[in-house]
View 1 (tube, rainbow, N blue to C red):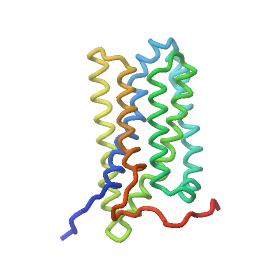
View 2 (spheres, helix red, strand yellow):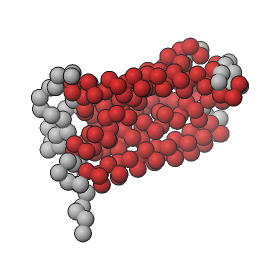
View 3 (spheres, rainbow, N blue to C red):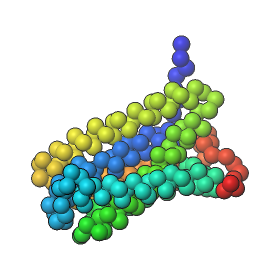
View 4 (cartoon, rainbow, N blue to C red):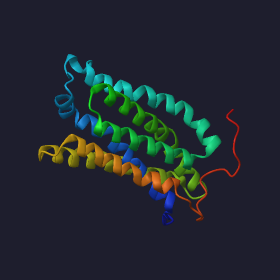
Length: 205
């Protein structure tokens, strides 16, 4: 019989992290038509126009952050790095929500991409380290399911809000607030039993 799974604060932080990551990854594409109409940029050319460039502007910083996150984890710890990443995601989506023009929207999406790259690189290792002596695969699989919850929830809720006439700015602002939940869980002081990081700082190499 499998041992009962036991969760702590950082587990719940990881669950909400995956949900917020899914939300911030999808909320701009879901709102893209309204964004284009409001800010006046084209969506034609088979996705190669301004709309497609937004995804490129997100992907390049994301890949750069994935390359950097190992250094960040070794120097400042995975938990702190993930907390800062969630703040970056929140700030990026929040700036996108108030962007008055396409250029600022592009920059805001790039900021969010930096945070998303760190989450992509460190969220799973944090869960593994939390349960290194207790079948970590079970916890990883369970935690990853919250990505799917975030995907379905974002598409359904954001789509419903847009259908009901809610401004895309409020939808993005909601995603910004959601991202702050795991940021607080990762960054606020904690003295409980879970120790996901090494006690010593590691050299960047």
